[in-house]
Amino acid sequence: LFLLDELGRATSNEDGVGVAWAVSEFLLTKRAMTFFVTHYPHIAKLADVYPNVQNQHLGSQITSRNGDIRYTHKIMPGPCKSAG
Image (cartoon, rainbow, N blue to C red; front, side):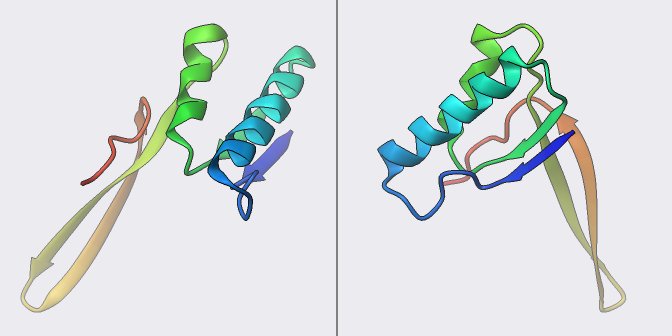
C-alpha cells in the first residue's frame, strides 16, 4: 500500500507533473494499491490510459445554523472540478 501526498511539489509545474506521472506509471506496472493526492489535474488523465485507475475527490459542504458552522466531507467519484 502506498500513500502519496503532493508528489512533485516544490518543482516547476512541468517537472512535477513528469515526476508524478512517472511514479504513478511505475506503481501501476507493479499493481500496487496506491492512494495519490495531487494538485496536478493532468494526473487525473491516467484513468483514460489505465482501466484500473479510479479518480475520486473529497467533496465538501458548509452549512450554518444558529451561529454554528458545520463542514461535511464525503468521498465522491471522479476528479475534482476546478474552482475558479
